Image (cartoon, rainbow, N blue to C red; front, side, top):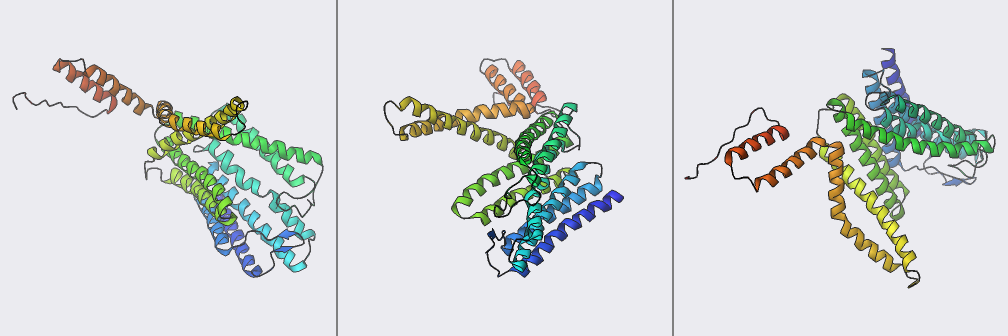
Length: 401
């Protein structure tokens, strides 16, 4: 009961931080866009409201999951993200509010900016590392993966300490120096921590893929939802990067927030109502086309570089290498997609793969078989192995009809 109450208190704190930030934003509207070399943080009312909605969704679903499954850390991870994101948004707004009042970077302003400089770490790291590593049981896949969990915790600590203590200008606000800068060792800690967290994120995704391969029943249905959310998040990253160069940062950030919204929604459905839908087709297409895109992109880059080296004695133009590589990628698309589809089916959808192989084998024998009794027996056996019906009946029309 105490844990349930604590989860809703944390959710209330997170939402309260977002609402307080909106109130300060309303009070600061109409002010200058830059003071003492510090630019105003993203402050469009519609975007700020959308950020508060995302924060409330993380907090609400996190509290709901934590209150019903208090021993499972998944809900608490969502709450950590919500509270940290709320701290980030409010500290940025408080710093700007102080700048408007004092027209100078004082101790209070620099400390709020210092807090915003590293508050993104406990907001982002749980989503990309701990959640896929622990979902859905709340425990690592094995003792070996438990070591990855501890290594991820250490990496997150190094990253946070590095950003909090690195001397010199703040990463998010270069016009302000870190008021708590310690020494160059902190800068090295930040770099090392970032590299380790990135490696931990890849390992966590690999853990979730391995867990999906070994799972069945309820757990498999739950992991499918998180895979779908991950696909949406990756797509939002790609689209937001393109939009940022064409339109601007505000729309790009809104698209990325939309992708992030899928994470708490998928976790809530997976943990509380996993039987709502079957999204196996979405997962299958995500695995196939995601792998296909990565493979073709690597092949394209490698072929362009190789052809440029080979053609350099003949011509200085790189357009020929680009054209040949483009044609090669176009020709490889269909066979590569078919091969990757077979690989995905064999690794993750074994029943479908075995059924397809059985049908291919039966079709090959069908061309040579002339005995109807043998053919009907093989057809019944095939249906029992692939479709697994409760009973099988075969009706053959008489030759005179």
